[in-house]
Structure formats: structure tokens, C-alpha cells
Image (cartoon, rainbow, N blue to C red; front, side, top):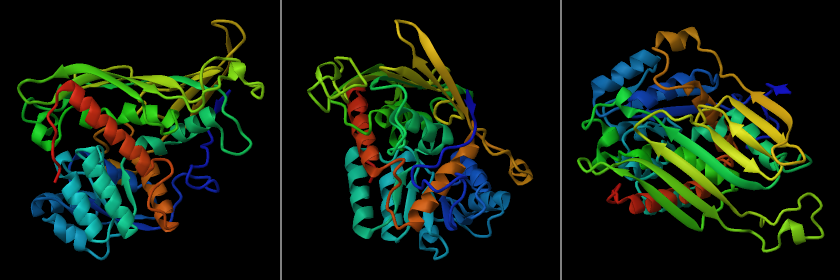
Length: 403
């Protein structure tokens, strides 16, 4: 069975086109490669407007604005934050400035979308989240993966729709997720920010948020009770270059389905909620880059590239070890590049048109008066930042202050 109709997004069950949303005026802070791709993707959202862009140099900002048809550019971040025509600031500059810039935006009464990683530490994340709640402003980490129709569908396939539809793979047992690429394809060692400790470089900051988000999603945002990380550090730069992380998630009940007379769906000793995750990330070589969710009744694969996927495969388990039942494939193509997008140079990274799904969801949530998106909550972000802190500590990476 092949399915191509996108599911309704988690933030609004009435939406049939995930790019439909109310108007929102964006300010782009930082004019690098990711910001370029975000600006390109916004061209797929008819109600989105890039009101202004800012970089540390006015020349860079103007060049970026000219490329993307933006009328206003600034050579300072403060000017962008003060612009009354900007509703929300997309922050795409270097990681080490997350807390400082996030704080300025919130104090300037702007909604904020902070690129990954959200902050340099869980303490910084807690501060920014507290400030956003205090000022009743929208704040989110740019975990765009959560907004792809493929991931919206994966969530429904595992957990159901929260109403009549049930999940199809049973109790989640394990999540396996990897994201490794050869950074030397595009980054010069050791001068690139990817390798600079003081700018927030390293694989845990730059790559790990994706497999961590996968694990947290399919274990319903639970905090793991055990974390074990191994990997390689770079003695020259002080950043981590690759790692593998094992997580254990605690049970939510001490009664196993096999001993629960009221449970007619399962006959397993696996305690509800309990499970493990195996995560891999790094900057050395290309991995398959899939996320596999293994359940008691089947498995789901988020196909490569799992951090920006368009395809999900569900394989139900048949009776008997190794027996395979029904196979369901879901595929949701990205919007095609327009002439405007091609004229501005296309994209730097794979499937970047998918930023449009995130941007549309943000607009819908802000229009409702919400300060977070249900697809990627502030609680999810705090859990992720706590994990990042612990992983870096176990690998021996020195803490980085982001203030």
C-alpha cells in the first residue's frame, strides 16, 4: 500500500495543506548558508513575508536581501530586533550567541525561532524559556524535522491520532537513529566554525540534536534514566567529532501486559514506556541516516535522509519469528523549486524546502496565541539540552557559556 496524501499537522487537525497558514512577517538574523535555505523555503509559503534581514556587516546583509528580494537590510542585529515590521526573528547565526541573541529578541518583544542547537547549555535554555513564558512570546528550537509530513505520519503510525485511530507497531521497544556526514566536504579544518569550540562547534551541538529528537519523539518526550556516551575528541580544537550514545527510558507502569488481565492487545513482559535508544552522530563519514522505531507488533523506518525525510515505511509483524506482514509506504514529495528559488541559487543542503512546513506551523501557532508548537515543545527542547550537556560531559568537552 502506498499513501501520498499528507496527514493533518499536529497543531491543527483541520489543515489539509501543511503550507496553509496566516500571514507572518519574518526577520532573518544571520545571513549564512542555513538562513539562505530558510529564506528560499519561505517562498513556498504564500502568506509569509521576509520583512528584513541582518548580518554583522551591512554589505553582507544587503547582498543577501538583494538575492532574496527583501526590501530592508541591516548591518546590526539590534536594528532588526527594533524593526516594528518584524513579528518573529529567525536566528541562524553562530551557536555561541544563542542566549545573548535570544534574550535580545525576547526583550525586544519579538517571537523567536532559534536554530539548532537551541542554546549552549540546559541552564541557558531554561533561562530563555522562562523569559519567553514571562513575556508571553512564542519561542521554539528549529527542529524542522518534526514538521515534515513524513514525521507527522510517523507519529500517527506509532501512537495513533489520539482519537479513534491506534498505532500500528505496538509498544515501542527501541529507537535506532544515526546522522553522520563527512564535514570536510564543505568545511576547512580547523578554521571552520564547525571545529571551533568557542563558536559552538562539534558533533554534539551540530548533529546530535537530530537523533536525540528522534528518540525523544518516539518515547513520548520522556527523560531517559540512563545515558552512556563514547566517542572521539579532537585534541587540537577541543570539540567532539563523533559519538555513539545509548539511552534507557524508564517504565511508566510496573505491570507488564503479559500479567495485565485488562490488556488484550499485548502479551509481552516489556513494561509500558520502558525501552532503549541507540544513537550515532559524527563529522567523519556518511552513514545510512535512518531512524528505525521497533515495536512489539512491527517496525517503522524513517527513510534517509531521516533529518529531512519524505518517506516512511511501516512493516507489520506477522505471527512467528521473522515473519513479515503488511507493508505500508508513505511518501510525501517536497514542493518543487520555483523560478524565483532557482534564480536565487537553489539550496545549500538536502531537502531544505521542508523548512516551509516548520514556518507554516509556527505561523498557525502564533495566530492562535500559543507560545510553543505541539510538534516540538519547550519541554522537548529542555530534555534535549539536558542530554546534550550530559553527552558532552561524558565525552570530555569543556562547557561553553552562551552569555
